[in-house]
Amino acid sequence: MTTPRTSSLTLLALLCAVSLTSCNVFDRDAPTDAYFLLAPAAQPKVDGAKLGSVVLRRASVVRPFGERGFVYKLSNGQWRIDAYNGFLADPIDMITDALLRDFDSSGRFTFVAGAGIVTATDFAAEVLVEEFFTDFTDPAKGVAVVSLRAYLVDRRTERGGVHCTLLGTGRVPLHNGSPMAVAEALSAATAQAIAGVVSSLPASTAPTAP
Image 1 (tube, rainbow, N blue to C red):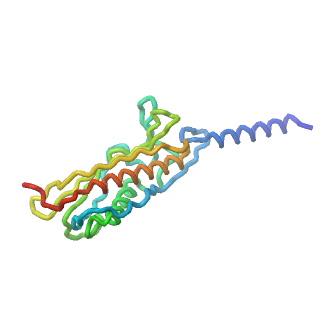
Image 2: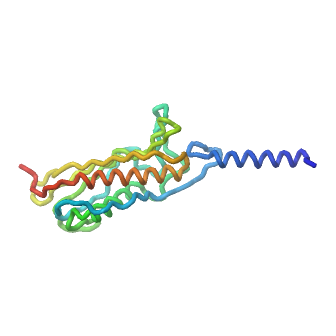
Image 3: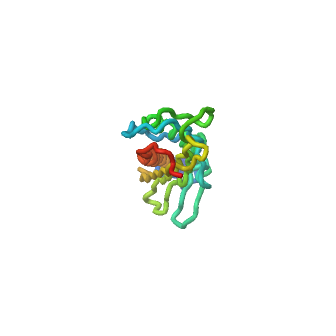
């Protein structure tokens, strides 16, 4: 026999189940407080002449893309920083670490140094994160967007100067609207952007023209 209390409990359980299965990054009735690491896939070795040694400084970022909370571009043109879901560590530090790893694994440099290593190098790499967000302009088709701009500075002469500019972009659709899907898509888009930067390294090591 079904009592009013039993019916109420059953209805409550059904409502909770529906809430959990439909949860996405815009549902705030039951915040997930989910945090992730940025994990772009490592880049393989690429063909090309050795360019000498390079120091890679910590990347800088265009605001507001350096936030730990996920950054969303919405269909109404507004921007939103997720107060509940985001990265466990500073995303710009993680992008810098991934660039350092992939500059080294590319095989294009004789030596790759991080910013904390004090040593003379042939080049310095200055990186700007121009875009790092998830585009929900079409709410049903979220896309992770990452754009990097790097300047390879020639340090072999006192005059120095920018040897070349390296560009990389990544755009990866989300599998669904969950926080994990956002983190995975941003990681994949970051890998695409880094691949673009590495693939645009110059073929020549000739000094910058006067």
